[in-house]
Length: 280
Image (cartoon, rainbow, N blue to C red; front, side):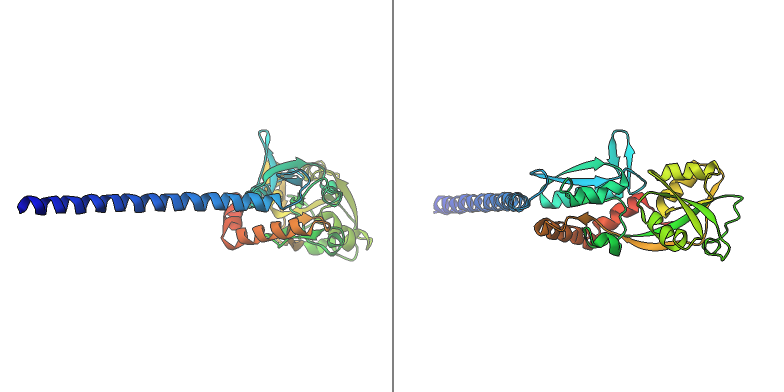
Protein backbone atom coordinates (compact mmCIF):
# COMPACT_ATOMS: atom_id res chain seq x y z
CA UNK A 1 0.00 0.00 0.00
CA UNK A 2 2.82 2.41 0.86
CA UNK A 3 4.42 1.68 -2.49
CA UNK A 4 1.16 2.52 -4.26
CA UNK A 5 0.82 5.84 -2.39
CA UNK A 6 4.44 6.74 -3.19
CA UNK A 7 3.88 5.94 -6.83
CA UNK A 8 0.77 8.15 -6.97
CA UNK A 9 2.60 11.05 -5.27
CA UNK A 10 5.50 10.77 -7.71
CA UNK A 11 3.11 10.82 -10.63
CA UNK A 12 1.34 13.93 -9.27
CA UNK A 13 4.66 15.75 -8.79
CA UNK A 14 5.79 14.85 -12.30
CA UNK A 15 2.55 16.15 -13.80
CA UNK A 16 2.90 19.38 -11.75
CA UNK A 17 6.43 19.96 -13.08
CA UNK A 18 5.27 19.42 -16.66
CA UNK A 19 2.41 21.89 -16.12
CA UNK A 20 4.75 24.53 -14.66
CA UNK A 21 7.25 24.11 -17.47
CA UNK A 22 4.46 24.36 -20.03
CA UNK A 23 3.11 27.51 -18.36
CA UNK A 24 6.57 29.13 -18.28
CA UNK A 25 7.20 28.33 -21.92
CA UNK A 26 3.86 29.85 -22.89
CA UNK A 27 4.69 33.07 -21.01
CA UNK A 28 8.05 33.30 -22.73
CA UNK A 29 6.45 32.64 -26.10
CA UNK A 30 3.82 35.27 -25.33
CA UNK A 31 6.49 37.88 -24.47
CA UNK A 32 8.46 37.08 -27.62
CA UNK A 33 5.34 37.26 -29.74
CA UNK A 34 4.39 40.63 -28.19
CA UNK A 35 7.88 42.00 -28.84
CA UNK A 36 7.72 40.77 -32.43
CA UNK A 37 4.30 42.35 -32.83
CA UNK A 38 5.61 45.68 -31.47
CA UNK A 39 8.50 45.57 -33.93
CA UNK A 40 6.15 44.65 -36.74
CA UNK A 41 3.81 47.52 -35.82
CA UNK A 42 6.71 50.01 -35.78
CA UNK A 43 8.01 48.72 -39.10
CA UNK A 44 4.54 48.87 -40.60
CA UNK A 45 4.06 52.43 -39.30
CA UNK A 46 7.37 53.50 -40.84
CA UNK A 47 6.44 51.83 -44.11
CA UNK A 48 3.25 53.90 -44.23
CA UNK A 49 5.21 57.17 -44.01
CA UNK A 50 6.55 58.94 -47.07
CA UNK A 51 10.00 60.38 -46.43
CA UNK A 52 12.63 61.94 -48.68
CA UNK A 53 14.52 58.64 -48.60
CA UNK A 54 12.75 55.41 -47.73
CA UNK A 55 13.43 54.23 -44.22
CA UNK A 56 15.19 57.44 -43.19
CA UNK A 57 14.31 60.68 -41.42
CA UNK A 58 16.51 63.37 -42.93
CA UNK A 59 17.14 66.33 -40.63
CA UNK A 60 18.40 69.69 -41.91
CA UNK A 61 20.44 71.74 -39.45
CA UNK A 62 23.26 74.23 -39.04
CA UNK A 63 25.81 72.58 -36.76
CA UNK A 64 27.25 75.81 -35.34
CA UNK A 65 24.72 76.48 -32.60
CA UNK A 66 25.89 74.82 -29.36
CA UNK A 67 24.44 73.18 -27.37
CA UNK A 68 21.55 72.58 -29.78
CA UNK A 69 23.76 71.31 -32.60
CA UNK A 70 27.52 71.29 -33.04
CA UNK A 71 30.27 69.08 -34.39
CA UNK A 72 32.18 66.82 -32.02
CA UNK A 73 34.84 64.78 -33.79
CA UNK A 74 33.15 63.73 -37.01
CA UNK A 75 29.65 63.68 -35.57
CA UNK A 76 26.88 66.27 -35.24
CA UNK A 77 25.67 66.21 -31.64
CA UNK A 78 23.53 68.33 -29.34
CA UNK A 79 19.98 68.78 -28.08
CA UNK A 80 18.31 68.84 -31.49
CA UNK A 81 20.33 65.88 -32.77
CA UNK A 82 19.28 63.73 -29.79
CA UNK A 83 15.63 64.79 -29.98
CA UNK A 84 15.57 63.96 -33.70
CA UNK A 85 17.16 60.56 -32.99
CA UNK A 86 14.51 59.82 -30.36
CA UNK A 87 11.74 60.78 -32.82
CA UNK A 88 13.25 58.63 -35.57
CA UNK A 89 13.54 55.67 -33.19
CA UNK A 90 9.86 55.98 -32.25
CA UNK A 91 8.90 55.95 -35.93
CA UNK A 92 11.18 53.07 -36.81
CA UNK A 93 13.33 55.25 -39.06
CA UNK A 94 17.06 55.84 -39.38
CA UNK A 95 18.16 59.41 -38.67
CA UNK A 96 20.40 61.20 -41.16
CA UNK A 97 21.60 64.73 -40.33
CA UNK A 98 22.57 67.15 -43.08
CA UNK A 99 24.62 70.23 -42.14
CA UNK A 100 23.97 73.39 -44.16
CA UNK A 101 23.79 77.18 -43.94
CA UNK A 102 21.08 78.29 -41.51
CA UNK A 103 19.14 80.21 -44.14
CA UNK A 104 18.94 77.06 -46.32
CA UNK A 105 17.12 74.93 -43.74
CA UNK A 106 13.55 76.04 -44.37
CA UNK A 107 14.11 76.01 -48.13
CA UNK A 108 15.46 72.46 -47.84
CA UNK A 109 12.32 71.36 -45.97
CA UNK A 110 10.00 73.23 -48.35
CA UNK A 111 11.76 71.83 -51.40
CA UNK A 112 11.50 68.22 -50.28
CA UNK A 113 15.24 67.75 -49.70
CA UNK A 114 14.84 67.21 -45.94
CA UNK A 115 12.01 65.77 -43.85
CA UNK A 116 12.50 67.98 -40.80
CA UNK A 117 14.38 71.12 -39.82
CA UNK A 118 15.83 71.26 -36.31
CA UNK A 119 18.27 74.06 -35.56
CA UNK A 120 17.02 76.11 -32.66
CA UNK A 121 14.30 77.34 -35.02
CA UNK A 122 12.01 79.96 -33.53
CA UNK A 123 8.32 79.87 -34.40
CA UNK A 124 7.41 83.13 -36.16
CA UNK A 125 4.35 84.14 -38.18
CA UNK A 126 6.55 84.71 -41.23
CA UNK A 127 8.07 81.22 -41.06
CA UNK A 128 4.65 79.66 -40.47
CA UNK A 129 3.66 80.88 -43.91
CA UNK A 130 6.38 78.67 -45.40
CA UNK A 131 6.44 75.57 -43.17
CA UNK A 132 4.44 73.84 -40.46
CA UNK A 133 5.88 73.79 -36.96
CA UNK A 134 5.59 70.97 -34.47
CA UNK A 135 4.79 71.46 -30.84
CA UNK A 136 7.40 73.62 -29.13
CA UNK A 137 10.03 71.63 -27.22
CA UNK A 138 12.16 74.44 -25.72
CA UNK A 139 12.15 78.13 -24.84
CA UNK A 140 14.96 80.23 -26.24
CA UNK A 141 16.20 83.61 -25.04
CA UNK A 142 17.94 86.12 -27.29
CA UNK A 143 20.65 87.99 -25.39
CA UNK A 144 23.19 90.72 -26.09
CA UNK A 145 26.94 90.09 -26.06
CA UNK A 146 29.19 93.13 -25.58
CA UNK A 147 32.81 93.83 -24.74
CA UNK A 148 33.54 94.29 -21.04
CA UNK A 149 34.12 98.04 -21.52
CA UNK A 150 31.07 98.58 -23.77
CA UNK A 151 28.89 101.68 -23.51
CA UNK A 152 25.89 99.40 -24.02
CA UNK A 153 24.77 98.37 -20.54
CA UNK A 154 21.19 97.21 -21.17
CA UNK A 155 18.77 96.44 -24.00
CA UNK A 156 17.25 99.90 -23.47
CA UNK A 157 20.43 101.50 -24.81
CA UNK A 158 19.74 99.97 -28.23
CA UNK A 159 16.34 101.67 -28.31
CA UNK A 160 17.48 105.10 -27.06
CA UNK A 161 16.33 108.06 -29.15
CA UNK A 162 19.83 108.87 -30.42
CA UNK A 163 20.99 105.22 -30.71
CA UNK A 164 23.10 104.34 -33.75
CA UNK A 165 24.88 101.04 -33.13
CA UNK A 166 26.21 98.35 -35.43
CA UNK A 167 24.85 94.97 -34.37
CA UNK A 168 26.27 91.61 -35.39
CA UNK A 169 23.91 88.68 -35.99
CA UNK A 170 23.86 85.29 -37.67
CA UNK A 171 22.05 85.64 -40.98
CA UNK A 172 18.34 84.69 -41.05
CA UNK A 173 18.19 83.83 -37.33
CA UNK A 174 15.63 85.51 -35.11
CA UNK A 175 18.44 87.70 -33.80
CA UNK A 176 18.67 88.99 -37.37
CA UNK A 177 14.89 89.26 -37.84
CA UNK A 178 14.07 91.01 -34.58
CA UNK A 179 16.92 93.53 -34.69
CA UNK A 180 16.07 94.31 -38.30
CA UNK A 181 12.40 94.94 -37.52
CA UNK A 182 12.97 96.68 -34.18
CA UNK A 183 16.10 98.70 -34.87
CA UNK A 184 17.39 98.82 -38.44
CA UNK A 185 13.97 99.52 -39.94
CA UNK A 186 13.53 102.31 -37.38
CA UNK A 187 16.89 103.88 -38.22
CA UNK A 188 18.41 103.07 -34.82
CA UNK A 189 21.03 100.54 -35.90
CA UNK A 190 22.96 98.94 -38.73
CA UNK A 191 22.79 95.16 -38.85
CA UNK A 192 25.89 93.24 -39.97
CA UNK A 193 24.96 89.69 -40.98
CA UNK A 194 27.33 86.72 -40.76
CA UNK A 195 26.95 83.11 -41.87
CA UNK A 196 27.95 81.86 -38.39
CA UNK A 197 27.41 83.16 -34.89
CA UNK A 198 31.11 82.65 -34.19
CA UNK A 199 31.93 85.06 -37.04
CA UNK A 200 29.69 87.72 -35.51
CA UNK A 201 31.39 87.24 -32.14
CA UNK A 202 34.82 87.58 -33.77
CA UNK A 203 33.63 90.83 -35.39
CA UNK A 204 32.71 92.08 -31.91
CA UNK A 205 36.11 91.09 -30.55
CA UNK A 206 37.82 93.08 -33.33
CA UNK A 207 35.54 96.11 -32.81
CA UNK A 208 33.75 95.77 -36.17
CA UNK A 209 30.37 95.69 -34.40
CA UNK A 210 29.16 97.16 -31.10
CA UNK A 211 27.30 94.07 -29.89
CA UNK A 212 25.94 90.68 -30.96
CA UNK A 213 22.36 89.50 -30.53
CA UNK A 214 22.11 85.70 -30.33
CA UNK A 215 20.53 82.84 -28.36
CA UNK A 216 21.61 82.62 -24.72
CA UNK A 217 23.08 79.11 -24.83
CA UNK A 218 25.54 79.58 -27.71
CA UNK A 219 26.22 83.05 -26.28
CA UNK A 220 27.48 81.45 -23.07
CA UNK A 221 29.72 79.10 -25.05
CA UNK A 222 31.17 81.97 -27.10
CA UNK A 223 31.79 84.19 -24.06
CA UNK A 224 33.52 81.33 -22.25
CA UNK A 225 35.77 80.81 -25.26
CA UNK A 226 36.62 84.47 -26.00
CA UNK A 227 38.19 86.73 -23.37
CA UNK A 228 36.95 90.26 -22.82
CA UNK A 229 33.27 89.62 -23.61
CA UNK A 230 30.17 89.42 -21.44
CA UNK A 231 26.41 88.90 -21.71
CA UNK A 232 24.15 91.71 -20.55
CA UNK A 233 21.75 90.89 -17.72
CA UNK A 234 18.73 92.10 -19.66
CA UNK A 235 17.45 89.72 -22.36
CA UNK A 236 16.41 90.91 -25.81
CA UNK A 237 13.41 88.61 -26.31
CA UNK A 238 12.06 85.15 -25.42
CA UNK A 239 10.96 82.69 -28.12
CA UNK A 240 9.72 79.15 -28.68
CA UNK A 241 11.73 76.48 -30.55
CA UNK A 242 10.04 73.83 -32.70
CA UNK A 243 10.77 71.55 -35.65
CA UNK A 244 9.94 72.80 -39.15
CA UNK A 245 8.22 70.46 -41.61
CA UNK A 246 6.75 70.61 -45.09
CA UNK A 247 3.12 71.64 -45.53
CA UNK A 248 2.82 68.96 -48.23
CA UNK A 249 3.27 65.85 -46.06
CA UNK A 250 0.50 65.81 -43.46
CA UNK A 251 0.97 62.13 -42.55
CA UNK A 252 4.65 62.56 -41.67
CA UNK A 253 3.92 65.79 -39.81
CA UNK A 254 1.25 64.11 -37.66
CA UNK A 255 3.53 61.15 -36.93
CA UNK A 256 6.52 63.31 -35.98
CA UNK A 257 4.42 65.67 -33.88
CA UNK A 258 2.79 62.76 -32.02
CA UNK A 259 6.20 61.19 -31.37
CA UNK A 260 7.61 64.52 -30.13
CA UNK A 261 4.63 65.08 -27.85
CA UNK A 262 5.07 61.60 -26.36
CA UNK A 263 8.77 62.32 -25.76
CA UNK A 264 7.88 65.59 -24.05
CA UNK A 265 5.20 63.95 -21.91
CA UNK A 266 7.42 61.08 -20.73
CA UNK A 267 10.29 63.43 -19.80
CA UNK A 268 12.71 62.31 -22.53
CA UNK A 269 13.03 65.78 -24.07
CA UNK A 270 13.60 67.48 -20.73
CA UNK A 271 16.22 64.85 -19.91
CA UNK A 272 18.06 65.65 -23.14
CA UNK A 273 17.91 69.39 -22.46
CA UNK A 274 19.13 68.91 -18.88
CA UNK A 275 22.06 66.85 -20.19
CA UNK A 276 23.33 69.80 -22.23
CA UNK A 277 22.02 72.70 -20.11
CA UNK A 278 22.41 71.73 -16.42
CA UNK A 279 20.34 73.69 -13.93
CA UNK A 280 22.35 76.58 -12.53
